[in-house]
Image 1 (tube, rainbow, N blue to C red):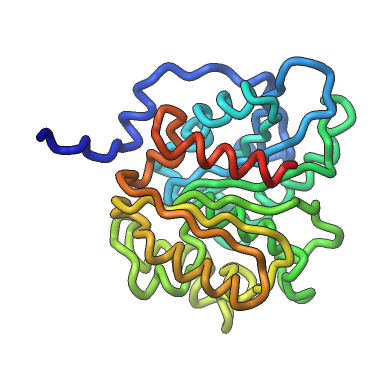
Image 2 (cartoon, rainbow, N blue to C red):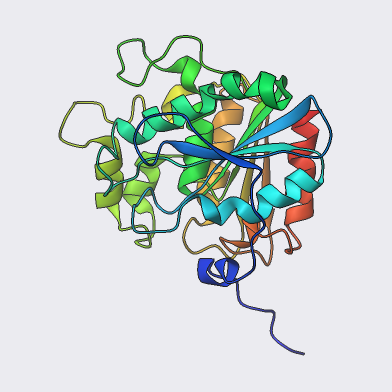
Length: 279
């Protein structure tokens, strides 16, 4: 009997042809404050998935192009996609608070996109991969941010729920026990502004903001060595214990990047969860 195939890496995914988005639009003034909108055929109103790429929050790793494959698939299934870029560690203004503020502004920019592009703001979900999975849950939690936080904004866009894919959701836990593939504890320190304030996780790490008051589907791959599925399991249990409705999925045979690969065995089930949240 032959051995099962090894999990793919991000270079395997990026070696494949990518289809283009419908349009690119800015949500801010700096070069990285933009997103790409993928629109299904027809006038709408279209349900919308806000998609946030991963890459360890680091500037040197690929950006929103990593999510083009699942964006194209969701568009084929009648879902509009707003695939956002943001400043990362190593970019001017990245880290804290810039990365978080970029995501917040990009999410709220959907209100500007809705009328001209036929988006249904009553049917919005958040999803993201790896570091983007953390940011997707963080965006779902924005209404829980302390008013004194520099990240707090009035009236954040409301989503029906979130589907983090191999998300590094609990920053404190990943700092303490995560693998070194994302640069170790130093990456988390740079993201949260360690050394600049007393409580660096209070407005950056979703477990500190529970309950979020919206459904979450926490997705992991059993072969993932970058974000082992134990991290997703632990966050999902904590969110459930806090009163949120949470489903925890751990796909055998899937590594880190199968979760954003539309040709993988896991993807049709992930897509079904997104469609279910969209109603």
